[in-house]
Length: 450
Image (cartoon, rainbow, N blue to C red; front, side):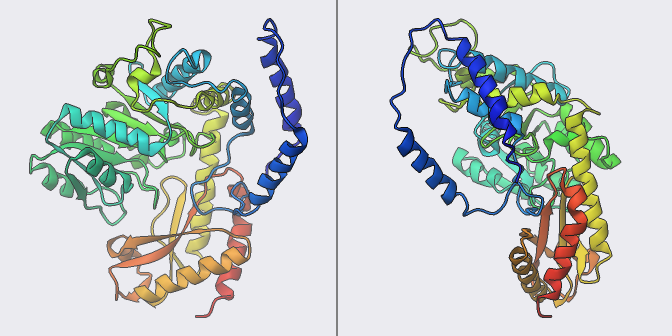
């Protein structure tokens, strides 16, 4: 568990430096009972033992990447002020830091001109993107692939607009032929392209989606909440690289710094290519926007109060680890993909497992061989449980027959879907731990009955 006692010394130095900026103020005292506070903190630490070991490399299940130590410390440092980035009145420095962060992320996608902000996470970020799309194309619906995140269908319902699920190809990417049929109806105003999907890490063919949508006069929103930072990686397949390079041509993009961006929850980001969409946020708040003529982040966000500490943590991390190809941060993503490819190769050599596809990013999915699809699903759950008993924590995901049939994990399909094992190889440390992961996985198979 990456809890370094040395962090306390660095944090103490930073906190003293922060306090020095306010030494001119009259002294105050905190009336805190340290004994009771100690008891409460130790009780909280005890309760937190009831968790899976998310920071450890043997946790390889869900998208839970530990924040960088500098992000943890910067967040805690900012909490001594507790800024609110809704208005400059409540978060002057942290608002400026947020704008710098968003500009840096926008440049990562090739945008110098943009409008964007941080928010609580990918759901809120996607909500704002779809809301703006609804305002630009009233009466028209939203289309996303059937492997896109479920939030798009749910948010479309909240917005009161139709949602259309677009069929995928055998690799789990949006089918261009299916999209063409959907757009032919004339009822869709926005297409969501996913780079990559949260279940299998697949990357939709964005260049082809853009060409088709431009032909029909339809907006394109890119949901890269999970995979967006991979635009910096230098070891993507050519087709995947082309999709990321095309983001600059989209209308909006979402990315979650609290996934690959090494940030604490919750920290999402939505960015629009055209700054003029800010007109849809227009509102007046005479008691919060009086201190400055500059734009307040609350004037371009649907959220009101937002943690300025999130911006401080992200700014500090980006200062230490710039978003640049070939840099330390980009290399860490490449190492994650190397780990995913190593796990994929090992699974291909195992006679009990059948990977569904070569990973495009860092998610690996595999079925367990069986006579029938139902039996394969039961065996996957049994291996999942056995692995957890041996401190290897995986995930389960269910996929349609169309995504698994070509690799023939079963002899007979008695179901239209199959439950598979899934690993998110999101920590750079995972690459060196793959032999141990595979060893424990083998042991889990041996401990489950046929």
